[in-house]
Image (cartoon, rainbow, N blue to C red; front, side, top):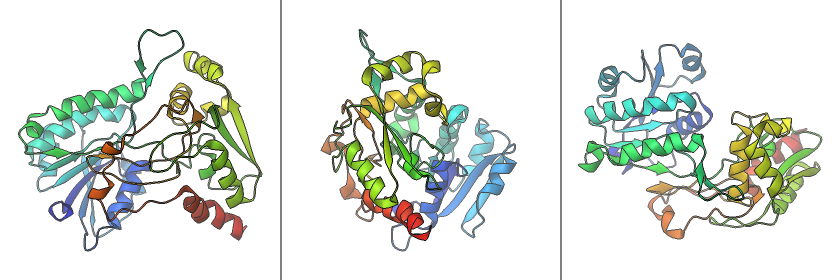
Length: 324
């Protein structure tokens, strides 16, 4: 498959996820695969352009507006696959990017998904709710799978259905273990039952994750317990959430829904086909989040190998602790 995808267009290359995708494309696990990458920016993104490294295989492409289908089509000529890693208000541009990609003859489209849409039910609810962060992505997915280019078979797509990313250094509370500086004490949020299980390729719980972090860093790990009842209250009234939970790029109610629903910490990282999986820490909760084995297609990507969370900590926290 990769041999046919020699020219990749990447939107959002300066972001946290987009930067990781760019690095993976520059050093792919697939032998003898060296794709050319077009990193797209809007004309107003001057700072973001400079944030992306220079490389012989990277072409930085500026367009006036990501919603300009005509201009995008012209810049996407010759591209085999489009990867979108935009977030926030910029997600609205995906519709134009998809239309332009179809008109340019792009063969594959990977939307800015990178998550799993959890339905939230508060106590006493007759029905379920979806957080706006997920709904905006879900609406686009509905449009994408019914796009004429997809229905005709001219374009295929991959929805990368990840778990929670464990390597988010900007999330100083929700991903404290990813802190670039080792603190005197780690504070790890635990929502609901700390022994709740979640199921991917390996199951464990928050207590074990805390032990692994302590072993790697040599620092104490304080479990910051939040009951299910408290979590529901914070979701209903986000302003009442503690300030530490608001120190994030995402709203506090979103995090509480994620952690409450998903369940315990996942210690394996893997990639799957069709619907891909990249797992990370899910701290306690009700343990309701499951992926059936039929949804995970690791066999399609033999070049991708799992990384145990303990190995991740050894490479990051452990290395820093040894050099301190």
